[in-house]
Length: 404
Image (cartoon, one colour):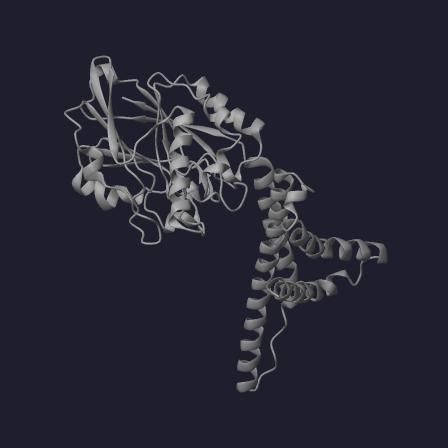
């Protein structure tokens, strides 16, 4: 019944959009009109097919990658149509208001601009569809290396040039192309990093998503190893578990995956590494968010407990809101915090110093390097993706941080 209601609603929605554009095709030849009609109704039919396939995934009618692209293309088509409907709705509302005002003051009804607005709406819809489709087909595994020199006040000379690679937000449940992932792994290893840090969200929901990917990410190499923390998606909080025991079992499996990868998972704890006779403290806090909609498992007091005097303090904390909410207030001796979580919004604009994304209105530190007094935070754009299987303007990131 739920699917039937959805189908009826979408068919009515598609019919409304279709009838709006019919006047544009009045002067087209009959064959062109037929082709345009078939292309338009192709997506509603594909949506019905998607619903059928969703219930028969076990039959492997499509590969996982094909299914994700198929599903996302339909989603993109309806997002584009929705924007078209919004433009047409605004135009209709403006015309209605102007008509009422004209009648109240006894003037003629103003000129109907709907003809031009239909064209504008069509252009907007086609543009958004093309951009989102390109972002999905071209940018999912188009990894970009971002480099930053981080000037740490008082950093010992022996630690200058120390190279850290940060990756974040792998979201294994969204990944399908092992060859594409391998390109990212190769870019990381090519850097010959001193240290690799992973800042959370290994999976979307469950540990099993990493099946088949462990051998890939196990290839990561650095002089002093890979250290990792958990993100909000790693706790299984977005799954309806049959009982608490099942959720805890999944959490244990997440921990085992980190061990299988050879990564040092820090659960509100710290480690010290010796580099050229100087000590670097690596602090890993569990997910800590200043936003109430996200979980807070982080305990900084516990995370720093037992950490003696060191020459440099690095903090791995998945959610960048932790920095202003807690780190800068109470832990001013932490030199560099590394975070992820935002994905850079997966959609935005980066042109030189100008950077914008919808997520920038939600997070003060949302992308790249920030400094307040003697403390830094770097917010990684993410290695994978979630929801929309692609990126527009904000590419998947491999961060290279060089201390100086």
